[in-house]
Structure formats: structure tokens, C-alpha cells
Image (cartoon, rainbow, N blue to C red; front, side, top):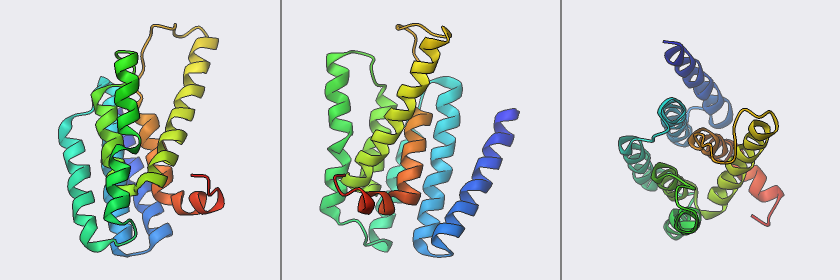
Length: 177
């Protein structure tokens, strides 16, 4: 029951952020839809350590519709974004089996298709940095060991959310991305 209240509160926060940052525009609507789906993914992954394919499908559907409404990211940029993070994650998972879950890889592919490759790299870097800090905390406090796993999805969703809302400013300010 607590997760329903937390989800509702986060959706309200997403609406406020979307309206504040993008006003009542088509871009604001698509950002809000993405944030709502990301919230659901984060909560689901946190509770079950699984990202259902239906949520990934919703992200791809919203991204596909946005091609007709949001001309910001060129189709080539989006296609490059599709593999910019997910392909290295697949390769890393082949080297270290179980390092990334399939849901995490598909999540980053969907994010790349919406964000484009620059913002997707930013999203992955922010999400993995936050996850690394959290895992360092777990190890230092002896709450987890080296073999323990935790849900990566909420951290990736946080990175994606940041890239959605502030990615333009961060990519322009730090052009190496």
C-alpha cells in the first residue's frame, strides 16, 4: 500500500516538473508520459528486481509517437542512441554474466531511442554513478557483500529522468558528452 502512495506522489512531482520545465506543450506531455512510466519501472524493479516488457513497450510506443511531434532528436541520432548504451551493456553482460539484467539493457535501448545518443550516455553515466555510490555504501556499512545484487533500474530511471529534464543544459554546458 505504501508503494501506491509513493508512486502517486512521484507522479504528482513528475507533473509539476513537466509543467514547470516544458509548460503545456507536446514536449511536456511526452516528458510527463516518460516520467510516469519510469516511475512505474523504478517502483516495480525495486520491489521485484524485474522490469516487465510491457513497460519497455510503452516507452518505445511513446518514443515512436514522439517522432511525429518532437523534431528535436533526428532519427539517426535516435537510432544511434538505441545502441549507444545497450550494446556495451550486452557486451559487459557477456563478460560478466548477470552483471546487467535484460530489463536494464532494454530500458537503456528505449531511453536511447527517445533521448538520442548524447543524452542517453549522460543518463547511463548518472545512473551508474548513483548505483556505484549506493553499492559502495552497502559494502562499507556491511549491509551487502560482493556477491549480493540490487535493483539497477531505479538508478537508471533517475539518470534518464535527469537527462529528460536537464539533459539539454548539461550536454551544452559539458560538450564532451
